[in-house]
Amino acid sequence: MSVATSAARGRPPLGAADQPKLATLRARLQEIKREPGSTLEALYATQELFSYVPPEAITMIAEELGMPESAVYGVVTFYTMFYLEPQPRYLLRVCRDLSCHLAGAPEIVRAVRQELGTPRGEATADGLFKLEVVSCLGLCDKQPAMLVNLEQRGPMTPERIRALVHELRARGA
Amino acid sequence: MDRVVTANFGRPESWTIASYQQAGGYHALARVLRELQPEDVIQIVKDAGLTGRGGAFFPTGMKWELVRKDPKAPRYVVVNGDESEPGTYVNRYSLELDPHLMLEGMIIAAYASAATRGYVYIRGEFGLAHQRVRRALAECYAAGFLGQNILGRSDFSFEVSFRRGAGAYICGEETALFNSLEGKRGNPRFKPPFPTNVGVWGKPTAINNVETLSCVPAILTRGAEWFKSLGRSGASGTKMYCLSGHIERPGVYELPLGTTARELIFGHGGGVRGGRALKAFKPGGASSAPLTPAELDAPLEPKSMGALGTIMGTGGVIVMDDTTNMVEAAYHDALFFEEESCGFCIPCREGTPNLVQILERIMVGQGAMDDLDLLEELGASMMASFCGLGQFAHQPVRGAVRRFRDDFVTAIAQGGIPKYRGRGGDGQAA
Image 1 (tube, chains in turn yellow, blue):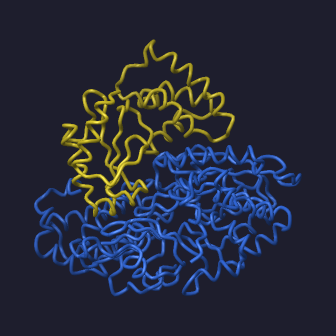
Image 2 (cartoon, rainbow over the protein chains, first blue to last red):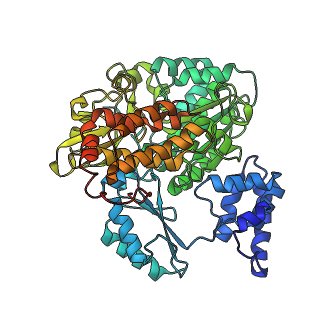
Image 3 (cartoon, helix red, strand yellow):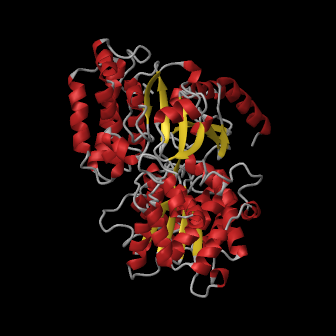
C-alpha cells in the first residue's frame, strides 16, 4: 500500500473544488522550501488551507522539498498537531496533566462532552467542534486550562464551558 | 530584590522594541560590540555563574566557549522555547511579555560563540508567543540588531529564523529539537558528540533556554558579581519559579535561585488553596519526584534537590493538598510520559505504558503488594532508555512509592481508590 493510499484512510481523492487550494499550496511551498528543513512549516501551510494534511499534499510536499513521501508521512504522524483527517472549525484542547487535573480538569472534560453531545469525544456532526484531551499546554496559571484552536482560555469551570460553546456556536463557521 | 528577567513585565506593550528600548534595551549589546571581545563576554558569563535554566544547569559560558573553539562553520545559536514540562509556564511569560530581552541575550551569545546563524524554536501551542517573537525578530532586523554587519560591525553578522514545533514534548530534548528543525521526526540523537560540536545541521551549536538567554543582558550591564549575589545557598542569580496545583495564587515568581519551597509556596503563593494542609509538592515539573512537607526548607536549587533524590528541573512547582491520593498523582505523571514517549527506544516505549498499567490496576482495585517491587524494577530497567525522557519518566512514580508508600499500600489493601474502584483497567480510569 502506498503512503498516499495509507494517508487517505479510505477517503476519496480531492475534487475539482480543491484544485485552487492545491495551486495555492504549490505557490507557498516555493517560498517555504527556500529555508532548509521546513517540513513542519509546509505542513502548517497545508493545514491552513485544508484543516488537515490530505495525501495529495504529502505527495506535493515530498516533491517540492525533495523528501520521500514516507518521510513526510512520518513527520505528520509524529507531531500531535498535524492531522490526516479534516478538522472542525473549533478544536477544543483541554489539558489533562497533573496541575490541571488537581484543579478540576475531569469536570471540564465532562462538561465539554455533555455540552457538545459527544460522549465519546468524537467531532460534532456540524463540523464545528472536536474535543482533544491533551498533554500540558503550559497554561498552568490558568488551570484548568484549554485552547480554542490556539487561543488561551482559563481557568475554566463547567459554566464557562457552556458559555464558551454557546458563544462559538453563535459565531458559527 | 533586583529582578533580572521579569523587570519589564509590567510595562505597557512590553513586547515591542520601543518599550524595550525605553527601558534601556539593547544598550548591553551596543556596549558589548563597542568594548568587549567575545572572550571577555564568555569570561563574564562564566564568572557570573550562569547555568542553563531549562533544568540541566550546564554552565552557559563554557557552552559558548566550546562552540567558539570548534572550527566548523557556520556555528549556530538555538533558542529552546519548546517549554512543555507539566506545571511549567515561565518561558511562555518571557516570550509573550519580553521577547526582546531573550533576543538581545541571543545576539550576545552569537557574538561570544562566533555564531552566524540562529533559530528560535517555540512549541506549537504557544500562538501568542509566535506572533510576538515574529514581530520582535522583524523589529530587530529593521533596527540593525540582526542581519549583516550588526551595529556597523563588519565582522559580525547573525541571521535568525523563526520555527514552530507541532505538539511533541520530546522536542525539548536538544538533539530531538535539532531533528525537528531539520524537518524530521523529533527523535533524539546519540550523545556524544554533544551539540557544542555536532548540533543542528551537524554544526557546532549553542542551544540555550529562553530564561538563560534572558539573564545575559543584565549580567553584561551590571556585572558578574551582582548576578552571583542574587542567588542563595551557593547558587547564582535568580530563577523564575512558577506555582500550580492546589495553590492559592498560581503564577510566576522571580526569586533568588535557592529560595526554599516554604517561602515560595507559603510566602509568595499564599499557601495551599482553601487553607488546607500540604501533602506533597513537586519541585520542578512532572519529571521531578515529589517531596513531603518535612522537606519544605530545602533550597530549590540543583544540588539540594539532587541530595533529596529528586531534581530541581524547570522550577515548575506543583502543590498537592491533603485530599490528594499519591497513586493518582503518580498515575497522571505516568500518563503524560506514556503519551509523550517518542517510541524510538524500547525501555521507554514499553516502560511508560507498563507504569500506567500497574498504577491503573492499583487504582481500580486489582493491585498486589508485588506491584510496588515491580514498579522499582521497571524503573531500574527504564534507566537504559536512549534519552532523558525515559530515564526520568519513572522517577516521579518511584519517588511517590518511596515517600508516600502508605497511599499505595492502602489502595492495594482496600481494593483501590474509591472513585476509581471497580472501573476496568482499560485506560478509562483517567
